[in-house]
Image (cartoon, rainbow, N blue to C red; front, side, top):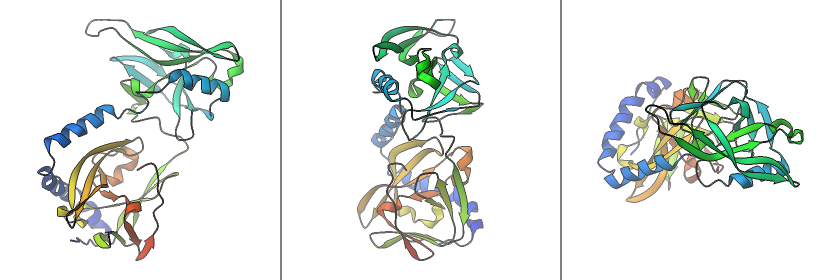
Length: 314
């Protein structure tokens, strides 16, 4: 049940051919229903696009202020309805919570659109923000469209760094670009980084006491504030143990992750393995490699057990 590997060269050389082998073996196990579920997940996985109470969000920011504000110092473009509505080097990072920031812009940076206030939002009896409807006028080949997923803050000086800024809901826009690079899921935290390190420490992963993979080299992915993740070649895993899952998740620092279930002794263990088919540039070293949710398994580095710390993130 184990495919052992020796040497870091093997890790790179066999990745894509063995990945294709696993894909072919799993294809027969993936029903049309699972494929439809995968499509639905993709269509719905636009964080910030649905269900956010913007009036409450603005009210909270007016009461408590943002966690942090920091100049973005980069060109940001926003596309909505095939129209560039922001092309600005004046955006700022605004942390509404501790996990990651959003981009805010001076209201004057909006272009190719017009806005109207739908609801004023007060703080201490004074209107200091508004829920806004942003409109795109029709033109040849493009229909009129509008969105009410916009917050505008007034020029009131008591608002400090967010005075005169506008917030476009990330998931309600069609495309965001950072210089010429697409932004996925949400803006990246400028204080966060990802390092991928080749390691010659032996790696063994077990499930219910049975070895699933054992290799002499792996890629260790270090992401600020998250558990270390260990990526290995698919050649290290018997393809009979893996069955393709319908689950797809997204990460702005790594890309779209696809999942496998582990089938061991006739029992299904859901979504314990994932891989990035086309990771973003900063995580290119993990393309096609397999990673395990080792918190639910038994991990050994250099023969010593590693305790997995749980994370709300992958």
